[in-house]
Length: 254
Image 1 (tube, rainbow, N blue to C red):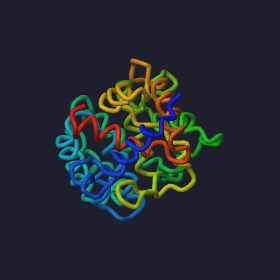
Image 2: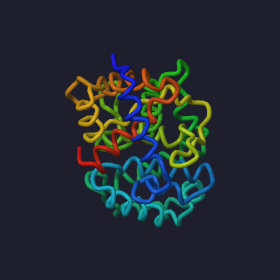
Image 3: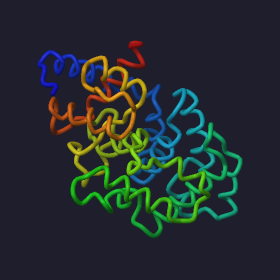
Image 4: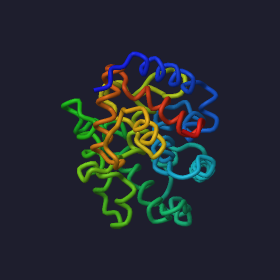
């Protein structure tokens, strides 16, 4: 178990350094920071997080294109645009996320906002026992209930099959943590203490180097192990250390 005071001081210093306004401009979170309305932030953040693998500059470029296709009014577009207008997403491609996937995501978001109380409600549906894992499982079940192509399901992590759910956990960090600097904190029914670390190759590599993670696969079991160790250092907000681990891995080449 990790309780080393020096390690905590080191991680606190690094997290504080990276959790600053300058971090936003080069990060995908810059996309939802263009909006002020709750629903616009949620929708732009969810779609941006969905695209968040690969080069950050490319993620930002493609997420910006999505916002442009929604006329920079995500909520109004999703809830009011005609099905014919939805067809503009048919040619969208980013890596393995293609036009069919994009059309389904936009259509599913429409259903969720018109008939299921929006994205926050969709995640709260199974959150009852303060379990983010249950929340993600419940959300996935709802989101994929509108008859997608089989291929589209791979773009929504299945934590019941041990997926790390990096992109969904990152989205939840954006929505739930309220640091008044980078993360938005516009969802107040889910507790920051319950959030799980967004685990990618950078975070995993640095965590193993620091002795915070022993598991070698970047999967949900690793997410649970790393988050549990981070809770020992900061019980009320373990995912705060995402900034330290990611920042060290990306900006300091560790």
